[in-house]
Image 1 (cartoon, rainbow, N blue to C red):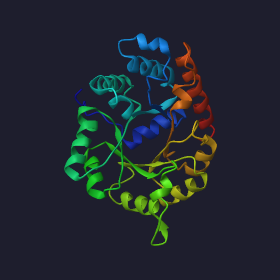
Image 2 (tube, rainbow, N blue to C red):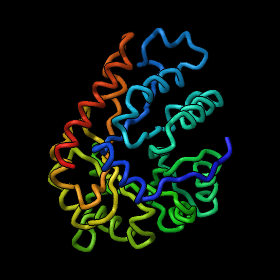
Image 3 (cartoon, rainbow, N blue to C red):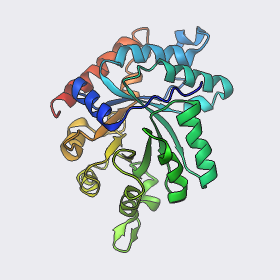
Length: 273
């Protein structure tokens, strides 16, 4: 799959948010053990499921996040399913490769080519632990975005992210430093939704950047708290919901139920937009 050099810039993303009155990002964490059993008879069950989910939710979502681990696990066939899924997503919807890459510079360059040229994603998630030379290659592609891990809400986040260094937790240093490597036009941050007390604080550190916010729904975060503490003049957030949409039902009505779940999230988001 060769790149068509298409991309969605900040202005276009904001326009989509305003048009749909939504900041919903649907996470395609597609697990063959969880999809409806009748789909396992399809030639490509992963794509068959994703296609139905996209058809049902595309009017409410402004973004789709493909968690690459769920495709890489199946080898070449999984990568092919991922490519077909990416190609099927409407071009006016923002695409995220949730791959969490990040390595020395020449390796990161190859990762960037993978997700920005071979596969034409708008963005890719990046782990910044190795520093600027591991992130910078992703920022060299015009119109593409690096979504850098800022602060997460998993249990292990307490191991490093909250360590106090020079009077501030490590995650604050990461936010300040990474912000200086690019701009709000090409850097977003992953900001976990389940630590409610930190959302407004993180927004105060990065007032203009977009945040990709996981943790709403099955993980305990809620739309109201996220919107009240992180929305800025451009909306500035993408709220990711995976299980709460794509696995709303495991029966024959799975797509219909996913569409209803997405519509419900959109309706709630519209109250704040």
